[in-house]
Length: 171
Length: 329
Image (cartoon, rainbow over all chains, first blue to last red; front, side):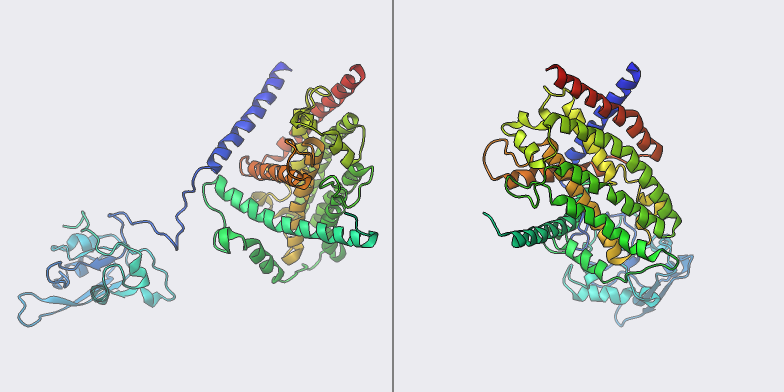
């Protein structure tokens, strides 16, 4: 009898204790990120789809279409074309297609690149209406980015920090 | 201020309907906001400032849905059940004294009337579950009946105790007896019954169980029974059940305010009675939300054990204690 009463009273006290804790949480600030209105900064090692890196001096892509990434890709989702521009020593990239529907973000292409010409982007707003939206023209993307001032590209580009510091994993 | 008879009735009818409708809609908002804050998130924010238009959006959405009556159900009972759930609450609210002079009908057996009508909504959930011809709904209906039978007993024992203490079933009279400072409220009247705060706890627990609120929401235990007795209801059929749930909470909290927290009596003597009544009632309603988001749902046998092994002996004990105290002192 005594034990039962003790159990009941202790149970009752623990109920009040639980309510005290939840009320404490009630008055603490909320921790939600209001997603479409605010976004979090992606961490530096975030793996989005790959993107071409621009040479800060010339403002053009570093890539000279050696096609090592194309060969390194296990899913065969990269295709690179290059042209030799007049007066330039090296070839330069003219078309860089990424079929993101097949890409598994393994990073072999980034590892294979000898000059750090590609890196992971921090793009995560990747909703689309058809499969074709994910065959990405990365060269065009780079050019569009160059045209728009920093952080004012498309709606999708806007969300991510415009000039990302080089990925530490690259090289 | 007196208004001639037929107009007074119509005014009260419109007033109560409006009040219940508004509360049912905005208690959902309170519930969602409260749930959010308890979980450190903001709750609805998009529709209107602070999500204030959310209930209207919800209501419009519900009304735009098809009112579906599944094949093979008992049509009449199926359609009557939501109404049967809603109407007793509306009737019962007529005797609640919102302030000294604000009550639709001040009858001298108000308390009895509330409990007479209060039992009907068990039947409504049962009929809704039974007529749905759905296994989840029937399990839910069976649960509701055994749960409500179990919790009606301690509830009524507590009410008997309160009637003994106050000596009347007239709700306005009960409030009038609690005039003065906070220690005159029935919940603190420990010289009549030393266990009075505990009696209030029993009352509150039973109120939660009777209104099928968490942690006693066995009737619509989402994780086990889909939506219990409401599974087959769509559109405003479901909407009325949903509103009735909140209206029942409103009634239960209003009753708790009248019986234990001094109704419209002001503890410090300022501001009109209506304000104090609503303040106390909404505090209780907030507690109901607070409890829901604090405790997980009990198991069914745990629920019955709580009633038969703890609440009924406890309420019987307070009943006997009160009568002994009243006889002796």
